[in-house]
Picture 1 (tube, rainbow, N blue to C red):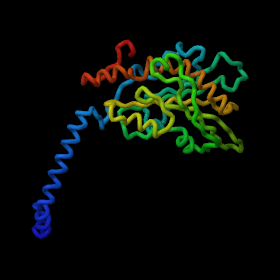
Picture 2 (picture 1 turned 90 degrees about the vertical axis):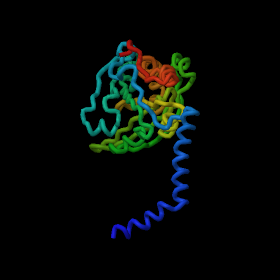
Picture 3 (picture 1 turned 90 degrees about the horizontal axis):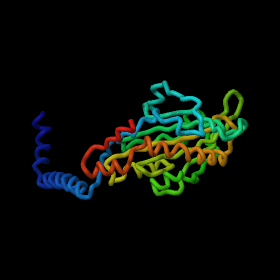
Length: 270
């Protein structure tokens, strides 16, 4: 019986057309590898470490925003679903420059970091909140002004952000809250999943990372316009700290790639 099954297979394997196909496939694989090396194209992305863990962010550098409390995600299933594990901070900050009655006085800042996985699907509030019973009532993309140091460092004047107005009903009460977010991706900025995937999978980059920065104001009665303005004000303080102290030093990453060496953050950052 075995011989009866194997005989046709052996005949196929001996066919000249089959052998030609095998040779062509093998040649194509080798040629593709050589072309990728010559053109410095990287199909597989390597992880790149933060300069300093997000949890070690210097709270004094955030003034006039006062640190109120840190929220720790203890549920392992939630952490796994986020994909960020311990590379995140979820802090409540207080804007000491506004009155106590200002609805933007208390701000929730949620930052996550991901690296080395080109197939990762970025977690965004558009989907994550829906799983918790929220509905998107309105959404738009808009710009906030980049801090001066970031303008000089990244060569951008504005940062594209996404803002959502969420709504949820529970205990016979309806609550609304705006959420603003954007991503830092390989020394650039993005506000949609597709943009993140495109930038993180650049064929010219050996390494890849993206970091989501998300802002909300709890259940305070904040409009979308107020949320964007408060986020812009907050980012004038937070973003330079992220760029200078935490996110990878991208010029140093690219220089290490050129030398064929692994990128190592500067010792004084850790």
